[in-house]
Length: 459
Image 1 (tube, rainbow, N blue to C red):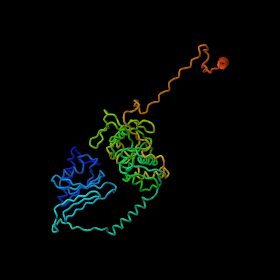
Image 2: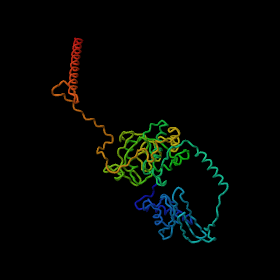
Image 3: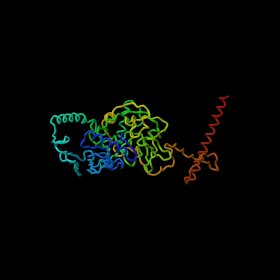
Image 4: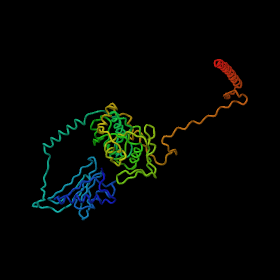
């Protein structure tokens, strides 16, 4: 889904891009603008947009994305010609523009904080490739059509379907860093619970539901909850489905999910109620990959995920469990989760429909205090260092209580089954002992009489 032309040097990607640029030039393009989703900060060196610019020729502008930065840069290509690279942040935090002026031969890019201008060979008006600049305004008919469509959409998405007593989080407090891609959050809990109950409402006895952190895209604030709010949480209209998976495949999926921590990852899994486990973040991940393909688990290494339980019972590697998730994982094996798509699936509805039904039907219109904790309900815990208990059995059998020794009768009275504790009152002790002796005598006489009667009945 995200990778192509992968090799150890980045040469394959550069060759593919160069081929596309050459085709564009051969078809008569005077300018080539490369739209990229490569980024710079946080991206591997061989995939960065500035690295690609240096390995190609014939590109005038690279409009970049992915790393959510704001910049305008000038880099030199393989022929020593300047190339502009620009990116304008994320979520409309800023707006940039690129202006190509064939009349003056200039190419400029700017954002609120950065700007740069290149000078290309100016073209003359007699040149067939000359493009006359024009001032574009908004067409009244087109704008009217846009306004009507916006009103129609808002009439549907603005419908209030419930309310929330709490704020549910996809982001950290900075409202920028993804929380849902790095650790459990209350919004991740809510979404997975919605998937699970959506299947239950359809008559499916599902055990577990997953959602990838990259599929949860917006906070859900307290107050009225509209259809649009829940669509913003799951905006991709992913197809939900369910399938049967083994306990071992579930454990391997959790191990893959934990492999990038503490770094955030769009394929980090949020999980539904009843599933609990601990991730040890101070040891290397044992997950084996070939490129973006899951190969298996290195048995020579410790697993990061431990004490995985469902409703208090250890996940049984040999057992079968019913998993609810979207088709990207369960059908396509996206995110390297090929272990989850071994068996046929049954389709359900869309992911955001599940959120709406969960609020209206299961929560009766109120997202309540059960989701009050921003970091969730304690389904996913992290641990540094070895387990405090050396017993690695994830569900140990309770140890029996030690047997109490039989009380010993006093040496001077073998018939007393349980001596009295000293009270400091010799008279009370003697009286109590006499009472016990008398009761024992009565009991013995009663047993003898009953025994005799029994013998008579047998005769």
